[in-house]
Length: 100
Image (cartoon, rainbow, N blue to C red):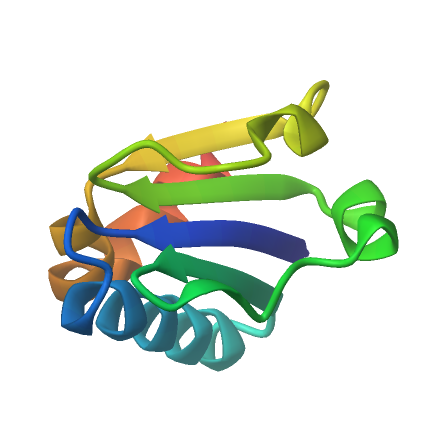
């Protein structure tokens, strides 16, 4: 499965990147292709390419604040979760994806 997503926390520092790393690591362990964009105090990093979004089966929004560019995901299956869930319970996140 190809999964794209955005992580963002209110301060845009540690938790944003921890969530990104957690989702990418667990996704790889489960055999998925996972691409995660971060949005925070440094702006948008690892920005998702239009082609990757189009090819994605699911979008994960692990956010605790407003993010830019949500219209890019119109028409896609979206799982919205808290940043902490992505960090602490990545397996449960992927279990939720499987049930979408």
